[in-house]
Length: 116
Image 1 (cartoon, helix red, strand yellow):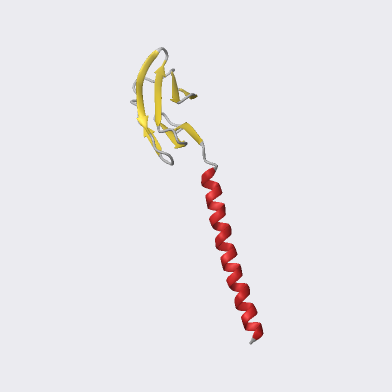
Image 2: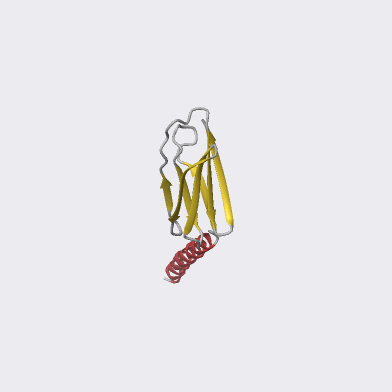
């Protein structure tokens, strides 16, 4: 009878300890997210569409899409924390051209480009 109680106690202690460790791990994984990224939807394809991924408190992103010296598209978008936004761009006459995408969030700037 005494052995049964010890085994049950150890099992309960193991389950509670595991649950606590999983809870702490998830809490720390979410706390460390403070970054944003910009990348092309299809890096090797012909589409100039790109994605902005937000994991910061900032929600306002401004972007410019430039072909040569011509601004194709400029816009301010709202992206909440944990969300991604796909920005579609028309792909007219891109042969032998370079597309630059500049994205601003607060004081930070990221730039990507794609040659056609």
